[in-house]
Picture 1: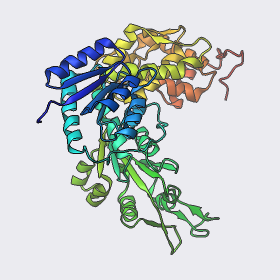
Picture 2: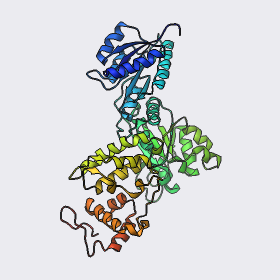
Picture 3: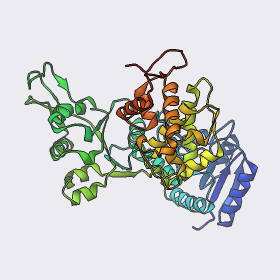
Picture 4: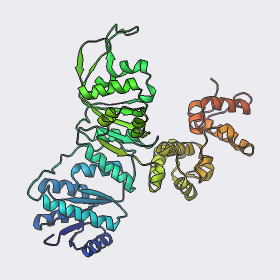
Length: 467
């Protein structure tokens, strides 16, 4: 670079401003400082900078407000935003509004220097054009995707970028990592957000029903077809069609889906007329589709159609720094549902959760927090409220209450009674929170004589366990 690049640092925390200034100055940048968004706007109108790095949480003009103003008056200016509050809403919104990049706090100074060098190079390449102007779109409705780990921030940024396109998206991740939530985030932040998001689980639809479910049928096309019915693909036209666990789709289903992707039209069962459909396809799989192609269980040509952009969702054990954020979020969701609200975790419980391997990922974490709240007798969740598997660092997991050792049978009976009481005798919900089947719960009730000699009395004074 012929002249030293100039950077404006915007932060209402003096210590942070000085720390960032020192790191960037040592890397060869010329630095100017602003204590808030309002001062920054005055400076960028008077001085030519190569890039701006700004905190998001500031008053009265936030980093997002500053970004929005800069996009209007000088859309070629790269803006890098910093925040300690990592969430899908913030990350996607910053990228959609035109931020050059998004860095979660605490800031890795080496990463910051590299990012600002890229921003400066980017700016000097596009100084005389405005091709990076972007329209503001309503924030995503997906609020339960939370994370400030680098892996999740990278996912959020990719969602923000791919949302603006029409391309197909393939999401890879273990069960419980939030693949459908990511798909909904892509839809909600796209131009198709005002149209339908239709989802199917490919492993749940048998071949005998697949064609009618996807394509619909006309009246009289088969026994029981008493009226014309639009299929799910037609219902999703104009919007987004999400295929969960697409790796479980049968060969017949794969062939029919490929034809839709190639031709952009469907034909209802029993009809000779084709119907055009305008769809964005998002697929997800817990299994590696390339491996399935190699073994002949998935069509290679279909994989090419689906795999335009791939989003890899990390497992929860790969981002342990996000566990406290997620746990607090779920506690805020369920903690207020009790007469005496549950408000926090003990430090021992939080440590145990961070060290657990979470084979069921975010879905399992939510289930554990909901269960713990249901059993809790105090405002602070303690070890006594947690399921045994979470307390083992080896991540062992069992869904069978019958396997609890004999020395814990008394505790097992007490847990069953407490869970029935907390759910007001709702056995289906009690079984789910205990991590067992309804049949297993009935066996335990019979074993302990619950419901016969000792009925469970809920807080309203009524016996709720008879069928």
